[in-house]
Image (cartoon, rainbow over all chains, first blue to last red; front, side, top):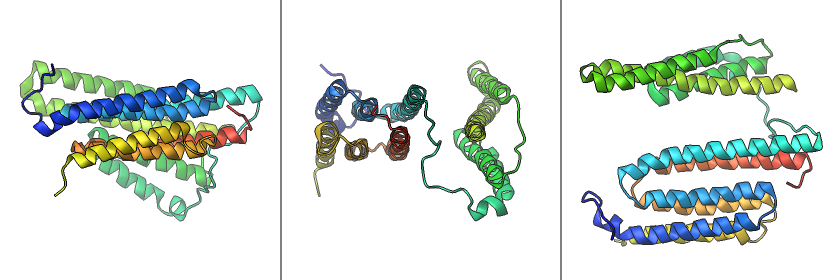
Length: 223
Length: 86
């Protein structure tokens, strides 16, 4: 017996069984493929198929809850594939004692925009990110920091070292948690707690994307 | 007017065909061909999300599948540069 809440449309409920069967079939095919493969990179590619089967399972619920669960599922799958591919590459480097280029693409970063107006663009991006706040604003501001680091690097200028990005990240977490708790103990202060959570999140995401820039810079320096 | 279920079943068929093609399709000894075959299954899942009206999830799926293909191609070409058969 399946209990269906009344706000799920009847047509979604009638699609539940075929969608679940499709998910099971796809997951089975993907897992069989993983079981018979021997080369690691092929197994990594087949993991993608199993992730898609997971998406079908979640989507078959058909409510807003499904949509809210698909977003973190996709992001976690992306992070997982990125991490496993890095592990594979570094293991091969250690095994064969050979280096490989960081970005094996025919890409040169001497676009004109890197030398003419990067500072203006970075200021605009940072201001717009601070105005947006929240996750989107953090992504925009972090993109600004990344553009700044890449443009300084491509002009061969030294980059101002910012120590203690981890500390900023910790303070941002505290802001976010305090804002979240305030929602429950003092609902009257909802605007203050909303802004605390949003500003915490903007600092958090911007500093994380800035850290990606710092990592790229260190890898370039090592070469 | 089409029956709405057509899109769901089209998505399911594309997803299953794409996953079969990824596992035992022609030319999958080459990891790049295998990566491109996963895109067929990904389009199928996009159709399924479209029938369920999951707009945000659909946009995120499109964005992440592009990024995943970039990551995989980078890993493949770095591994081939080192001449490994992993």
